[in-house]
Every structure is written in C-alpha cells, then in structure tokens.
Image (tube, rainbow, N blue to C red; front, side, top):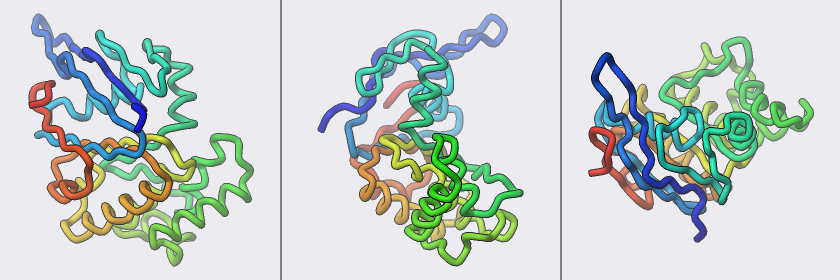
Length: 222
C-alpha cells in the first residue's frame, strides 16, 4: 500500500504568557491507503490538535506534511480545496443543520463540490440507506436519536467517497451499545469506499476497529 498522508518532525507550540505549550511535539506520522489508525489519549494529550494539523485546519509551528505527495506548507487556499475534494470529517458533536432534513444535510456535502441537487439527494439517500437510515431520510435533527444523528454525520463525511476521513471523539456522546453500532456502520462503509481513517478517541470500542493503535500523551506518541 502507498503512503497517503505523511508528517515529519511535526510540532505545534502555543504561548501562554511566558510559558511555551508544546501541544504537538516533533511527531512523525504515516497513514497508508485504506488503513485505519486509532489515536488514544486523555483530554489535553494533543490528539485533537494533531488531527487539526494533519487535515490542514490548523497551521503547524514547524515540520512538514504531505498528502499524496502534495506538501502543505501552510497554504490555506490549496489545502481547503484538498479537504473539499478528498477528505471527510466527523466530530463529537454532529453539527447538523437543524433546518435541514437528514437527506438534505448529507446532500450538502455533494452540492458543495458542484453536483446538482437532484443527484446529490439521490447519493445522500443511497448512503443513508447503507447506514440503516432509510426510514429517517426526511426527519429533522431534533427528531433523531443521538446515534442516528451521528450516523447522518458519518454519511455526510462519506458522501464524496473521500480518500481520508478524520474522526474526533465521534462516539463521545453515545452509550456503549450505540457506539458499537455506529462503529460497525463506519467500518463497513470505509471498507466499501476504500477510505483511510484516523480516529482520535478514548472509546475502547475502537480497539478492534483499527489496523494500528497509537497512544498520545503531552504532545508525543508513547
């Protein structure tokens, strides 16, 4: 398998008064095509900051990141386009638009890339069906359970069949059984679409999901 994303000597430092906070400290990281990596760590360990750096949502202090051999170099405009075309995102909070139905929330991801509304809604309907949500297509977020909302959020992240999906505490608000269910759907769809996945979490249910497990503490892998 080829390397999809690679980071070398990656660091992110903050200043708090006279103190320098090393949120990510000189990390090397590689994920290959169709690989699943889980990053465990307590709150404040730096795992969310690392995800933001790897996805280009935050700028790094030094080091380098390359995605499909394209070097980031903190070039915001190019990285933004890269995210739209090739990456998906799922967070602890689903961030669904409350005035849109499930199928409309998912279709937006396709429409942003220029697909027309009819085709986008068809794609959204198809992927929601794969997530077991065919009976909830026209429900609004306030009519869905927590697990259903997170399935919609995952469907939205997957609609453009991204090469790489970032998940930051995706099951943080779910109970154990719902967490298992959501992870199972994600696993099946990621395999079908051949997407690589990076999960930052403290949920032990992800242990059987990944190809590789990394543990982070104080900005470094331990």
